[in-house]
Image (cartoon, rainbow, N blue to C red; front, side, top):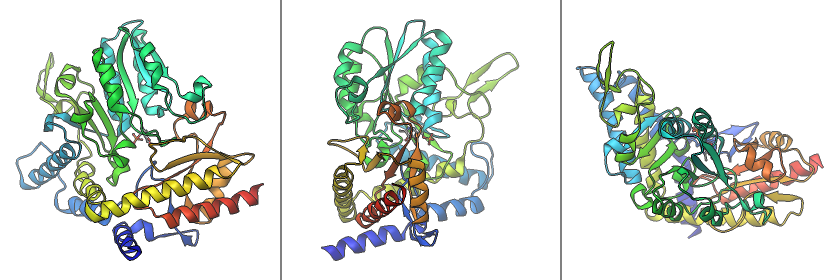
Length: 419
Ligand SMILES: Cc1ncc(COP(=O)(O)O)c(C=O)c1O
């Protein structure tokens, strides 16, 4: 059994060249996967092949090379569609990232709001699911309200969003709910399906920020019944600069165009423009077509890591990593973990009392361990724990228990050097 585990782990890791690299003379232990993932050879080879053999602008020309790039782009759209079980091609909009996807919805949806209307967001939101709503609300006097965490309510320290508050917050003034599937700080998985049903019972649409959720959960947007789901290719083994916005057809059709330019139009005169059908209506200008196309091998890789014997071994490994990390961090009285409890993805954010998180990250880097420090684009949430920075170790399915053990060993060494 141990042989099988080692064999599968080393096969999976062997597909991701960066994982066998060295950093500062030590074997690299890459634990900043919530920021971005390392890429498998399938994606790297695909990108270089596409740049050589299929590089021409999409949707625009009558020659073979352009047909090839258009086909790769549209095949990737179909791959995304099937990966999240969206009903059709028109539901998948390519953007430049989760941030761009949320901005698109916030900007266009909120044009219909008026003073006093409310937008509900969560206390564990990433900045990209806070600021676009604030910008949109400022334009028409709408109000952004926050579903607090237990910490914000003074009712605990787990960092879990207190969704029981929602019943008293939902009213006719609420026009949209912007949820987080999995927090990039706490790693806690939010019960989005349940919350969506509650919101829909009152006719309120829901956007889900799936930047982390797409990596750690199997997402079926029809079963979840979200109105919008946003995620980034680079966090799920694909290229940077590519995002996805899933939207229900009726919802997308109800939004006015966002950016204007080529590809999103049907006819243009100097007086008036009519717009293309979905999904191109929201894809103005030359998209990152090669990057988007990389979602075909990237999502295939993600599927391979979830299925069959490989999927089983990696899921077991993830369980071991979560138990080990939870035990190691919670048994140290100097450490406070931000995000505790059941149903947690392998994302661990914490502080060691009296130690600067940035100093720790720098020392860990010298030992070959790459982790993130700072506010991690969630300043209000980190501040709510009484901190102004933190350290985060975030694991991907290709990480191993041995790497978690190395991390803890190095963390203790760094701690002893700094205390
Ligand atoms: C929960 C969450 N939302 C949104 C984002 C923004 O993603 P991107 O920078 O790829 O647009 C991130 C990235 O860290 C995230 O973790």
